[in-house]
Length: 79
Length: 79
Length: 146
Length: 146
Image 1: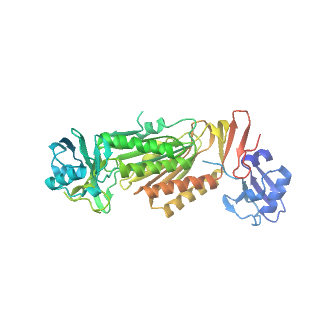
Image 2: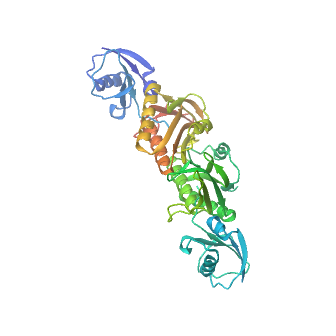
Image 3: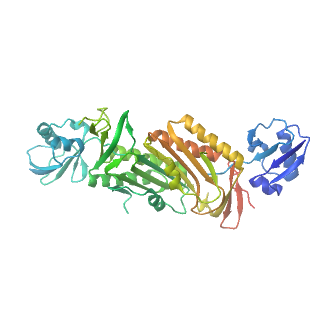
């Protein structure tokens, strides 16, 4: 399954890139983040993040969709 | 005892003037207002007013002072 | 400088806001009261504010001093119009600067509530039906006719 | 017109305020967040806001729609800066118009609180001591170094 990943803020700094395209067998978004966390050394646990698919917040248990754009949302600090 | 009186809003309309100078024997500010109420037909009872002497809020039981400036303050409606 | 001011002509809020800018400010809350075209279901054409100026000034300053003592704010100003106002005109402005928003909001609310309940300013409304009257709330419900 | 907007350059609050003026408005509440020179005791030189723009826009609009449904207000707008900001610069503005002040204050507070907690915007602070970091509250207390 091929997906596009978007990284923001500290996740982007840790990954060293703002986006990447990935081939993955992850069963759901939670498993995908776990794999990326190991690969990029993300300090933030999934419990502190939200996840969005194609521009809308999604559930961590959702299965991946081919060609979707996935963004991991670290705790926000606007305002 | 000679005092100066200031009237505002509906009291001024009822009195037909913004101020007047008065010779009075009223024992306190409450008695003074009662006399003026009878004279000018003020609709507002003292219980709904505040009273100020020389630019500061005062107690209705205060005695009159020669030459003081007394203002009766109808319920306010700024803002 | 006085923190409370009566203005007998329209005033500019941009410069009032700018006066409160400061590198320590994280939150700025402001409130404005504008002349509405309606008061409790009656169509309003315009209004006039009258003040007992000396006492209004003193009471307004007292309220702003209270706000500075009660809340963790940096500064607060308030300006209230007097004279004739048309629909849509600015009647009162409150601006509060603080490090954080909790205090800015709380102080802004405190100031407008106290100004409305304590400062000797009176509103005379002219209605579309030709009636007019002074507002002396609460108690009589409707403004007096005439 | 969008009620929520990201701005990548400084914006003017006077025209935003003017957009909310209307003869039915009796109360206008606004809130502004400015860049402070201090965050929890650390001297701040400046900061950068980054957003996930598509989702930030959608979430901001959702918050303003919620405010219009929850509170008896006439309109509400919000603008949030992204990019590099210096001390004293405006980071976020909220404006709410209503017939009465209760609803205007409540909605204004609701909007800024929700924007700060839900809209995907992140602050990167540069400190006077040379350190810098992304803020990811709450939990870690101090911003990450580096």
